[in-house]
Length: 51
Image (tube, rainbow, N blue to C red; front, side, top):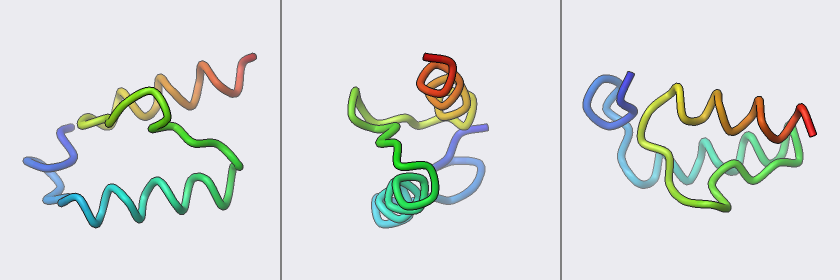
């Protein structure tokens, strides 16, 4: 699922998503670049949490 095309996320939505994940999980999933697809976010979270 593409965050912009399928869900309609714009840059403000991505910033809010980043802030919410950072607040809840204390993780910056976008520190290594912007994720544009939901599976990329899922992979990043999995990699970070498994370390």
